[in-house]
Image (cartoon, rainbow, N blue to C red; front, side):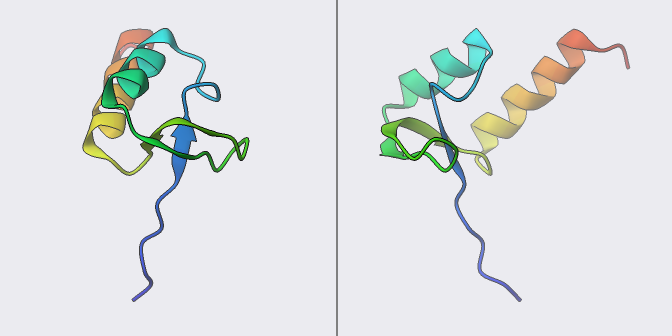
Length: 63
């Protein structure tokens, strides 16, 4: 069994304004795995990120 890695992504690397608001509201500052800048981030394995991703897919694509 492998150890689970955190994959934080920052407010500058996401493109959708809803992600940006979510990340800014969490006030978590860490190193982004995409751009390597220290900024507001969200762990891509977090429930908030997963739920937002599901909502955006439902919004943009018919089921």
